[in-house]
Image 1 (cartoon, one colour):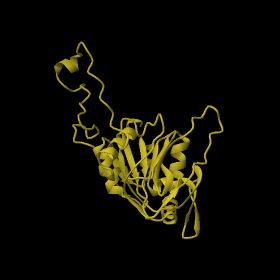
Image 2 (image 1 turned 90 degrees about the vertical axis):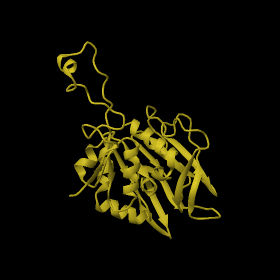
Image 3 (image 1 turned 60 degrees about the vertical axis):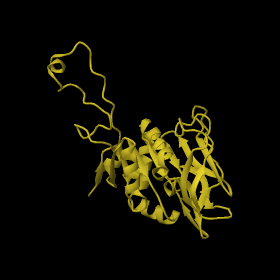
Image 4 (image 1 turned 30 degrees about the horizontal axis):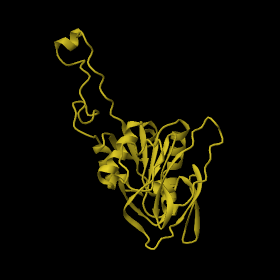
Length: 254
């Protein structure tokens, strides 16, 4: 099975990112003999798999994640997808087509296994939509992954699709949007969305998910942070500096 791999920046080991240094253990005589003070620990480069199931801007996501400092591989290999620090599930096109492709590649199993082990997953665009209970397009209902209850259906707006830049309303305490100024804009391309948030934590020890909203004709869910499962309706890989900041924030949690 072929895969494609990209590292965030050139390094001496092939696994360290921009500005990283080597661990000093093979540096000079002082390092080998034992210097009086230990060298600072090398920041780890996080590995990310972009799951390649036939629907998604995988190359754009790969490049953006690499620029954000991750070591990125495009693959549908189960072992790679399960063992990476982070998994990205992109998605473009119709809800039903994306679900058909994901199921054919057993991506539903990969996502379920990762979440059961608390391993981070990031859904993008339709890759976020398929995490909900169902999608309705042109009168056809398709079951989603049902990680969250809710229905994806057509936006009620003067102009559809919603295509272009828009602001969002992140909640207090958001990690995904931390460090971004109010009014930061992100790139959206979609005709369907989730219009209400239905999930409620039943265990008092479980934190309520952080839900970010946007408005195009009506309010809709623009992003979700829920334990290891995060997702965005917008495309961070196409959202310039703000999108790069989003990806760095996510990678920083891995």
